[in-house]
Length: 267
Length: 267
Image 1 (cartoon, rainbow over the protein chains, first blue to last red):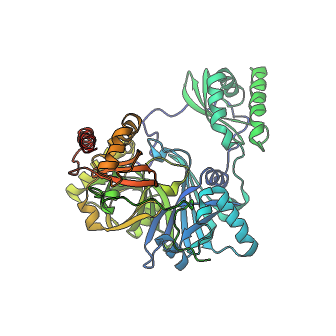
Image 2 (tube, helix red, strand yellow):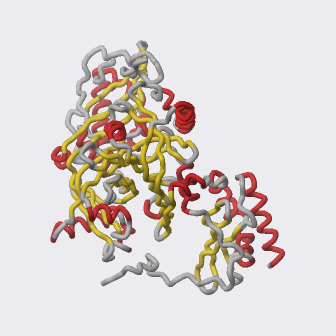
Image 3 (cartoon, rainbow over the protein chains, first blue to last red):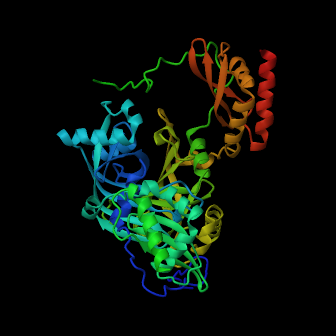
């Protein structure tokens, strides 16, 4: 039995295609997804190398200097000794809360090397670490702790089942975290609770599904909304883009209201 | 400034010592703590080695065959290719929910090698994986997924700040998860909400603090209770042991009630 084409995990029929192209299908890049996930938490798992070259996985906390994770670990701990002897390292960061099916959630792997930050760079790294890890004020200046900046050489993003992509260290450094992400969960809940008619109108006008009879918002980012759409042909997944990428969470309310108004007019 | 003796992180005075030895100070071993943490979840971070021998950290889910984690990963994924080329691996597993200070929580590192389970062993590994990861029914038998059993060679347990210990693979294999762990959070909340007088009596009678005037339960395991005790001399940490290690969660209620009765009698 060869099953390399996995298809839908529940064996459901394929989703019906859009009846016309969506107005915009812009989405965050892998580098942007990675920057957004890295900015959303302060806990990661570090993979370092033992003196024998064996892998060693351990919990760490981190701050961010630009997109570069800043670590501060004890030289007495195994991972601290590992990094001091071999700078090669990798970090796994998981987005959001634990869920019943962890593989359905988004996560990233960063691979690269750690280095001692010097002079001004050290002060900024220390401040970035303390900003993300307030408890570190108790140990950041202990002589047996070392501050490390993680230079990201390459990035792997996995968005869930079947959604994945890679990015270079340069793309990761040049990208920015999604400014909308901190406000997205509340906005999503509000749209689904109070504006389901507007979501359906958006799916019809802009998402390529003029036959939509219901829609639920499943994600919001700077480029637009993800919708799960009910149609007489079956359940589909639509993308509704903002006319311009949003620059701040404060623009989210007016941008979605504007989409709703324009969808209503064209309906 | 040399600060290797970190002392109390908040610079508070040291906790007052017990006025007499506690009745029992038995605690779970590092191997038992590790087995308990491994049994409490199904998500871990795998550290594997790339073809260049670099570390690679990635999210995985696992089942348990005895204490041995069972993985099932795609050969198309980077960590799957890594394991196929080099069996050396490490797993980091973090106990409980995300918290504001992740380093205050318990976690383990397992280090060892992965191997293909053969014959009957494969069926048991597959069943263990499916038991812990029900969603895997969609992919466990795909030809591009490989089932791996992780042979644990050594174990590092960190219980939080300043609490840590190591165990061998043999100790880990011989230990058992704490049978009380699944029931402990609810029992702890109940004791603190409704039986604070009984906790204080236990601290006085069995914990070595006859001058306790209040006590809060901060942990429960098969060997006993951890208490944070208020005394006129300051805040202290006491251990109150069960007369015998508990064999099941069902014994927890009667064991704590018995401790409370005996403490009352001796008070």
